[in-house]
Length: 233
Ligand SMILES: Nc1ncnc2c1ncn2[C@@H]1O[C@H](COP(=O)(O)OP(=O)(O)OP(=O)(O)O)[C@@H](O)[C@H]1O
Ligand SMILES: [Mg+2]
Image (cartoon, rainbow, N blue to C red; front, side):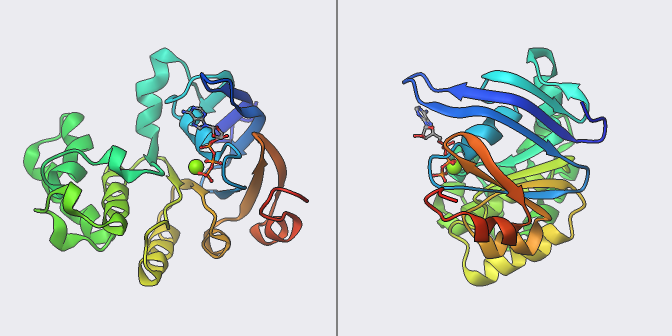
């Protein structure tokens, strides 16, 4: 098993309770500082895969994150290494104000209130949401929620960023700002996206999911040329 990978996943399989086999033998490595795009049709297993990586879903296979084997005892440490923005940001926002929401992770780790709120302000500024700190998260627009969820992840300064459909709901300037922001961040990144322009602006490598398996790997342009979006080569 490679020492160099920040994520090393072998033989991942996951079956939902209703019998759906969502992942059917996925091997995947992410190098330090590398950005990889996960592409593939709806329902091909991308979200299931990233939820397995931080232990939110437990199936078959072996996962190592920054050299640590994912198991019950390492789950908290691994979740600190991985900052994840979920496909549905509503699941991530639950505090009375946006600022407290963004500061939540730091406060939860025992940071002082003042420094945590200051760091949260900085993260809101990074995502262009400086003026929204006092608003209630549930009053935000869909695109604003995406930005705030990202701020809540950035403020923790994780070693790996996993963003599931980060451009959904973002307007074109918001998408350009996100590309610019992510380009400036040193972390290794997994970007789950249907947006091939976004993927090719950021990712050195792409993998294409079809029916719970990795059907191909290459540059974003190669993968987009090779696969049609119905998953056929
Ligand atoms: N909670 C669940 N119970 C049963 N089946 C599920 C559940 N969640 C997802 N699935 C199924 O697992 C498969 C993979 O879903 P997943 O959400 O991982 O796909 P995806 O590649 O992220 O799709 P999308 O591009 O639409 O986000 C699909 O067939 C989906 O219907
Ligand atoms: Mg998904």
